Amino acid sequence: MRIAIVGLGLIGGSLGLDLRRLGHGVVGVSRNPMTCDRAVALGAADEAGCELARVEGAAVVFLCPPLDWVISMGEAVLPHLSPGAILTDVGSVKQPIVQALSSQWPQFIGGHPMAGTAHQGIEAAESRLFQGRPYVLTPTTSTPAASLEVLAGLVQSLGSTLYYCPPDQHDQAVAWISHLPVLVSASLIQACQGESQGEILRLAQQLASSGFRDTSRVGGGNPELGTLMARYNREALLTSLRQYQGAIAGLTQLVEAENWAELQQQLQATQVQRSAFVDP
Amino acid sequence: MRIAIVGLGLIGGSLGLDLRRLGHGVVGVSRNPMTCDRAVALGAADEAGCELARVEGAAVVFLCPPLDWVISMGEAVLPHLSPGAILTDVGSVKQPIVQALSSQWPQFIGGHPMAGTAHQGIEAAESRLFQGRPYVLTPTTSTPAASLEVLAGLVQSLGSTLYYCPPDQHDQAVAWISHLPVLVSASLIQACQGESQGEILRLAQQLASSGFRDTSRVGGGNPELGTLMARYNREALLTSLRQYQGAIAGLTQLVEAENWAELQQQLQATQVQRSAFVDP
Image (cartoon, rainbow over all chains, first blue to last red):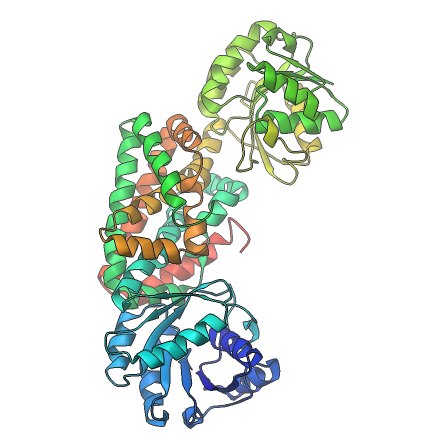
C-alpha cells in the first residue's frame, strides 16, 4: 500500500519505520528539507519532500503535525488527495479535528496512538513504538465502513490495541487520565515553590525521592504540549479540574477535622480504584 | 558494636542485614515470635526474641515499629537501656517523637532513613536498602556530640547520604515532597470516580497509561501509612495542602480564562523548578 506521512516528528517518523518494515511504500512530507533527508536516511520514508502534492496516489495519509496544526494541514492536504484516500491524524484531542475535517473529507477518520517518549523530532523515531499501546479510532456515523476497515487493519499491524469510540468520549476519557494529571502534577511543583523558608525548600529538594519524582513527572513535561491539550480539550478538562478540586478539598477537610478513620477508608478506596486503571 | 533493633519489619530487618554484614552483633526484638525466628533465619539478627530486656548491653538501639508505636515503644524500652546507650528511631515524622523521647533520654536522636519498597514485613528485608538514599538525623541543641558522632558513623557505613536538620524542618520538608503528594495523587484517583458516565470511566481505565500510572502511584499506596503521616504531620501537611489548593485553582483559572500564554509560561516554570528536586 502507498502511504503518506505529513509531519515527520517522533510519531510520524516512528509510523514510517514500522510501515516500511511491514512492506508499505512510505512517502514523507515535512516543511523542513533537512527533516526530509533525515527521515529517508533513518529509514522512516522511502522518499520525502516539502511539497504536499507528494500525497497524491497514497491510499492512506497520516497527518502527524503538532496538535494545533492538524486542521489547517488537513485542509491544505485535501486538494492533493486521490479519490477515496483515507485521511487520518494522530492528535491527542479528537472532537474539534473530526468536526472540521470529516465534513470536508468523508474518508477522514480521527486517530490517537497513545504512545510516546520523553523526546521529540525525527531523531527520536523508534521502531515498534506503538506495539502493545492503545490506538483509538474515532469514526462517526458517516464514516465509510470499508475505509475504517483498512485503517483498523494498519493499526493492528503495528501491534497496537485498537479501541473505537466517538470523538467526544475519547476527549472526556483523556481529560481524566492524561490532561488532568498534567495540571495536578504541575500544581504540586508550583505549590512547593510557595514554601516561604528557603532552607526548607532546599531540604525538600535534597530529600525528594520516588514519590515526588513520579507525582511531579508529567507536570514537568513539555509545556507547549500541556498547553495545547488544555486549549483543545478545555471543556472536558475544566469538568475534570472542578471534580478534582472537590476531591482534594474533601481530603483536606478530613485532615482538618482529624477524621483519621474516614481518611484511611478513603485511601483504602483509592488503592482499590487505582487497580482498575493500571497494574500496581 | 552491639546493636539492638526493636521492630523487625522491612526497615528493621534491612538494617539488621546491613549491620551484621558490617560486623556488628545484632539482637532483634519483635512482639511476634515467628518474626523473631524468621529474622534470625534470614540473617537479619544474630539472636531475637520478644523480651524488651534484650536491648540491655546494646550501644545503639534502633526503634523500627510503625509510626504510631514509636513513642510508646521507646518509653517501654527506656528502663532496659544501658547507661549512655544511643536510642534512635526510623519514623517518617520527627517532631512529636523527638519531643517525647529526647526529654526522657538525652541520647535519643531522631532518624529517618528515606528508603523503602512496595512491600512490608521481615520477608521484604533487603540488603543495602539504604545505600545511596538520604538518611536524616534530627539532633537537638542538647544532643551529646559523641552520641551523634557514633550514630552518624553507622548511618554513613550503610552507604546513605547523611543530612542533619531540626525535627520541625524535617517535618515541613517531607510534608512537601512526601505527604502532600499522597493526597494530591489520591485525589486524582478519587476525582475520576466522579465521572458520571460509566462508559467514559471504563474507556479511561482502558486508555490509562504512564502519565496516569505515575501521577496516581502514591495515592494508591498503603492507606495506613498515608493516614499515619497525615495524623503525625497534620500542621505541616495542612499548610502544604492550602498552598496546593491555591496552585490548582490558579491553573484552573487560566484554563477558564483561556489565557494560554500564561499557562504555557507557568508550565515552563514548573518544568525548570522540578529539575531542582529530581533528575528528569
